[in-house]
Length: 85
Image (cartoon, rainbow, N blue to C red; front, side, top):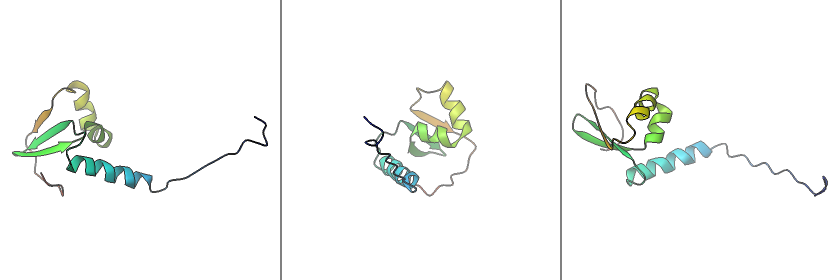
């Protein structure tokens, strides 16, 4: 292909991160692709390990050692979230 025939196509998606986060949240709410349940004070929270690990160094390190655990109970915490259990 000659240089004149080559076209550069650049498309930007400045709000793409919002779309991704919205879709991940929808999947979590519909219990799609969730791979872990966190238990805090008896309340169950379905989650995506990849999202937790990307957002938290604690979970990143934790999942390196305990990747097969489907339920994780977290003690000595206060429930503070906007998400329904």
